[in-house]
Image (cartoon, rainbow over all chains, first blue to last red; front, side):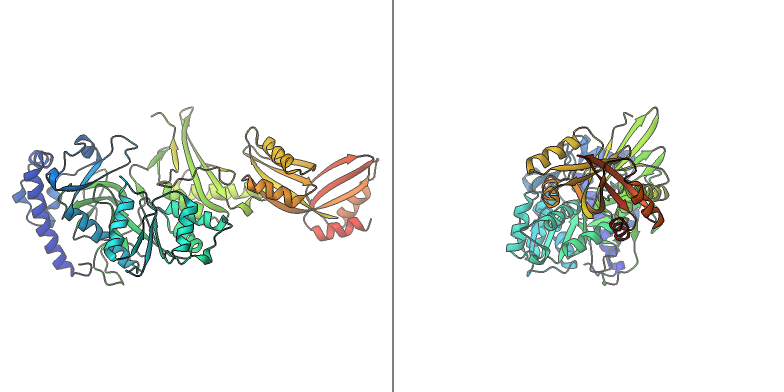
Amino acid sequence: MECMPREELTKLQSERLVKIVKYTYDNVKYYHDRMDAAGVKPSDIKGIEDISKLPFMTKQDLRDYYPTGTFAAPMSDIVRFHASSGTTGKPIVAGYTQHDLECWSEGVARCLTAYGLSKKDIVQVAYGYGLFTGGLGAHDGATKVGCSVLPASSGNTAKQLLLMKDLGVTALCCTPSYALFLAESLHKSEDFSLKDMKLKAGVFGAEPWSENMRAELEEKLGIKAYDIYGLTEVSGPGVGGECEYQDGTHLWEDMFYPEIIDPVTLQPVPHGEQGELVFTTLTKEGMPVIRYRTRDLTSLNYEPCKCGRTSVRMNKIMGRTDDMLIIRGVNVFPTQIESVIMEFAECNGQYFITVDRVDNTDTFQLDIELRPECYADSVGALNALVKAITGRIASVIGIKCDVKIVEPGSIERSAGKAKHVIDKRKL
Amino acid sequence: MIIKQLSIFLQNKIGRFTEVTNILGQAGVDMQAFTVSENSDFGILRLIVDDTDKAVEALRAAGFAVNTTDVVCLECPDRPGAIAPYMNKLSEGGISIEYMYAFSQCGSAKVIIRPDDIALCEKLISGC
């Protein structure tokens, strides 16, 4: 499936799209009403090229139809629920049929196989188990591959390291920020050291991370660190993943059809250009989505990959339209700040952005921690470092920020998705 | 002579220095001299103690960013003009001083010097 010639893939995508459009139109009032309002009938959709005739779906739609208004399968066929964290409103509830769970674990299994993992591997799943799709998603995928799965969930760092060592864990699945936290704990620990560990691969996702962070994780954990991509609304982790060349995230297009649109005009952008990623689930039964706007900003690469897979590759996510801060009129993504910080060897990768408004002007403060040995004896040296980072950020994003060095450990660590920003502006 | 000085990074907020004194007190470490160099966001507390290793251990365990720096400690009598010959030597020897601080007790003064060339500085002073 992953190496299918593109013509055949297009044919398969077309067949599946025609089917899913009819299925959702017939079974879900939401889709029926939306398509009627847009003046589109299922019979207008003859192939994948007709997808642009269909209306978009947003997170707000899923909230408006909370909890199960967009489900297409009867409740008796739903075998699992997951839900988003809902920090910005009601959670999004996703429902899965048995077939959906199989497709989902197939996606994760393809990723793990692409990272070189097999039934011989021992996989520690340190994503949170529960409503979050990370834990059970990675778990089911690793089980499908036949790996020995350690369902560690997140938290309890000392136990994570103990089991990692004693069981000879070869692959770690978690958020990149938690991986960094585990790596730091490992290096600080008196009981464990890197040479006790048999880790070879990291399966990191659920939040955007930079190439610099990859380099740091690979060095500190002695692994190859791979991206796994996904989102609850579409299925969960395993919508796509990298291959051994780590040159873009292969999307499993036979199940999840991607498009890139301009988030303002909503028109598709030319191949290769950056914009908002949109997904259509081609095989889902429980809660299909059609042209769902992910708010992730990225671009797609249709060039064949050296690994032989023909599936399209997604470039690193540049940020989310949600996370995008508009500071003094300039678009700022926390990932841009992160990649600047990681350029400086003195920094330990922890940062926190505070945006506020004082006297009608936006203030933009960046707190950073340094590696312990880099807290120099000289105020002058630290001032020079602050100046260098400020200058680099100004050249990357175009505005000045107020960089403050803070004490090590003073920025709050999180076991789940890292919180890097607080926006105190009352806008 | 060359001695070890502690350099502790402190964010500029109320109570940080107090915590340092509490920790060192509990560890039984005696503070002999200190100075603070600061900008608006943070300060660096430079500290001479009787047991450097114990102080470093106690402060690191409490999460402080502490490093040690070699400095020259110059001892001279506490009377007018006593330090001048030393400073003349250092100037003639081309030593540039990043920072220094001093304290005196019982008729004798100790001057802590952080020079650009620590070996040369120590040699010039011991030759006085």
